[in-house]
Length: 436
Image (cartoon, rainbow, N blue to C red):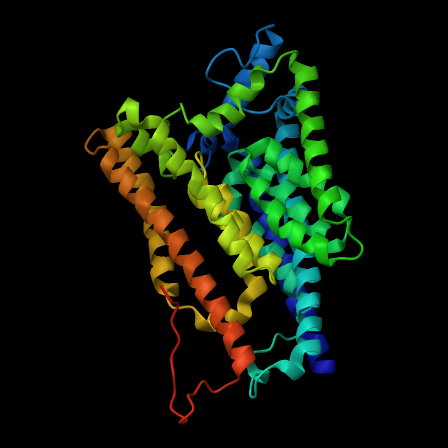
């Protein structure tokens, strides 16, 4: 016990040191004014969450002009009011605010990992009698350092660091999503519903998280129940929209914010799939293909909910990953939270098949993508096809990771039920594959 206590203390000290390194990196970026150069990177920001456009929106408001009258500003009115107040206090205040938001996201993820890990260990202890023989090596063990490790994964993730340094307001959506998941696991349905409403108000797509949260709410005796949870989400969303109307004096913001997310009128390149296709598509086919593209972010919700209804936290991870892939204006910050949640299922990593492939695809997209962007936009020696090819690599890496996690999770559940080693009736080794 003394040896384990010393190891735990050493791990805790090491991870706290990593958190301090993450804080130092972010403070250094703020001090260097990174929002001026990172904020212009199309991988980090989009027309929806770019800091430069928020500054322009602030300037328009101060000049007495509606920021939603043109096609430049696409952030929500409440966020505009918040940053207008912060920007008036000085540039450093905004930078510190983004760093604080990032650490709040990490705190929420740590709390999520703690609650989920405890519930998973408790569930496996209760169900152990129903498991097959020889499954002890693959059962989840107590790991008190997991919350700090998850926080460190988020804070040291280059995607999260760049997002914070670029002052992308996607951090607000990440915070709302992480806080909603923490609250629903804690049994506080009201705050969870409020957070889901905020995330939906900011980015629209997080509305799909209502499905796994309803499952948790249905099973948790402390929660409000399904019907009341839905009523709370609708009420808080309506309240946010009414507050926005009170700020602007019109409903024009709906077209400029949520209308832009759905209609995709801005073809500014990003790491997603929409911009290139709709630049090339004929105008009379636009509505049809727009519906086809948009439905991808929502259509998988029902089958995944049916299949993983007994695992709502894992379902939440899947839906967040789908949002990062199929939303109309994605950035690298969308992937920061799903990647940080992966350590919650480290016990299924042994079943992953494409780890090296996914890792190489992410590295290639991260390194070659900016090079091809420079060759296309600045040097003029390449074209949009080169850069879009790398965005396809980035999206395919996410798809491979998502499908591999689904496969690994299902095989793990199979082994728990049927036991190890995996053999047929004649005692011969068998292998598993997903049915097509």
